[in-house]
Length: 110
Length: 114
Image (cartoon, rainbow over all chains, first blue to last red; front, side, top):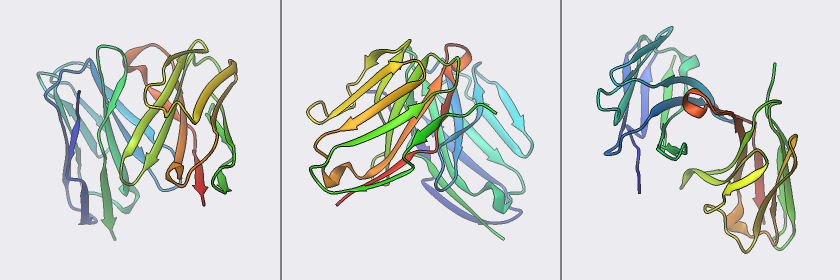
């Protein structure tokens, strides 16, 4: 069974600080997606990374796909209260199914 | 602004009652997913369809859950009979073959079974 482990499970930091969320697996994925979910809503796709070593930036968010396509990270610079939410990573397996991480609950305090 | 819609947004029902949740995928998307989210289990895939055909429903309790796509604009998830352990938020998502098979989620149906 393929697993995708996210860490940390929970993170509470002050506005302006930097943070990194990790998504790790022993399996290779053809691509990896990051979603953000706010209370009372469904997850919203932030980015898809496809190539090993790929780095994508979305304003203050930087996403990286590991060279071996087994892991990924999300780095947020100068976090703001609007970044608060549940961050989910999901890896695409060889059957085109998404394997979901358990999520990282992020709280940014003003 | 194309979105996945789900109805109802909230449902409270008594144990043993039938519950039907509906989803309208984004026009042009040929893949529809049903997920259940709880604090304990996170996001679980229940079933998914491609071109209206069920491809995988292994995540769904077969004895009480059923999922269908009567047409390309409607997907349904039915629970009969419902049990308190079915209380969760149920999400529908749609997508299409392409880079990463990206999924677009609806707002969810929050189900409470008493």
